Image 1 (cartoon, rainbow, N blue to C red):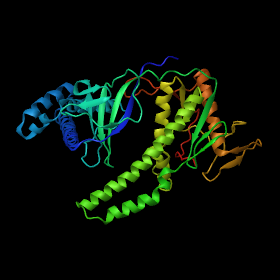
Image 2: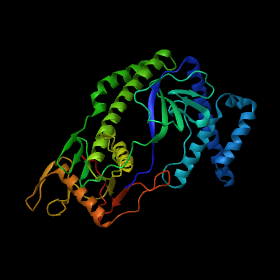
Image 3: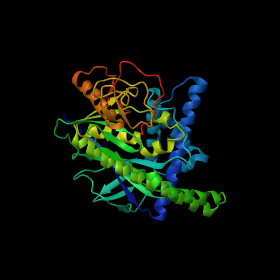
Image 4: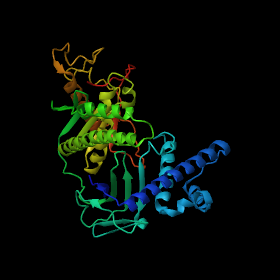
Length: 407
């Protein structure tokens, strides 16, 4: 399988000067303002007149907005991030009409991510020095790793997180990402809470529980935040402290998932997973915190794009497939399988570890798809319009019982 040229984002931390931080903060505010105004205009046009407004119409509106006295500050920042905000809104509406996402929401100053995207006309990258439009000095970037040899970024995204950290993400072609040599190994993956994943080989990867490890530190930080007066400088300091704990947890979780998914994709030609409804599982108040900490959705997302990068096959089993209740030895299905049952014996005499048995059943169903394509759903299209490298298995009969998280 030949993999097309892959565009990859390289994210680095940087430390802006006071003038650069002020310019970027103004740009973030203008981007948010333009996005919200365009969203409001498109919403009103449809609700009042039944008219659809596209990117070209909102771009013309932006030109008129800049001429208005009360919005003259929009002309003080680079125009490219403002145009990119309109393009992002167009993509959001395209995903909504294709039923891939919800209706676009307004950006909030407090809750939304502060970011601005620059294209090649709005930045200069020479000799490893990046200078953005409206700036004289290059950014002081901490180069934790080099960009691919001979490659220059096609777009640059600058962001500022709740913990007060500045990041720049550079999107460029990565010729080093190629299809791996084909191998004859396959693995089924059962996601859980006690063990983050259980493989059909019998291996269990323990759940690091990153949030639980820092829970005491997070509780103290949140308690200090609750005691501070609203609008005070001390409250802002306490808020940053809480945000730093959250970013520490998220960074450690993301690093662990990257290492795990890369290993699984490199060691197996076919990876089979289950299509879990994480959103519905989070309604379980007892397990919601543990399910969020496990981050199964991020695990699946990483497996999807890494399988596409390296020429591997990712097969997704339908969420109603009875992987835990099905005996991998004789094929008999048990009527009930409570979460507290971790080891069970089938009528045929086979004794199963619940998670290992589920992973083996998931693998068997995935291999059946690879062999004959029986019971395969249409491939889910990605936001870019291309079909993703995965298939979904539909079981002959669906159980109407509510989906339960795996322990």
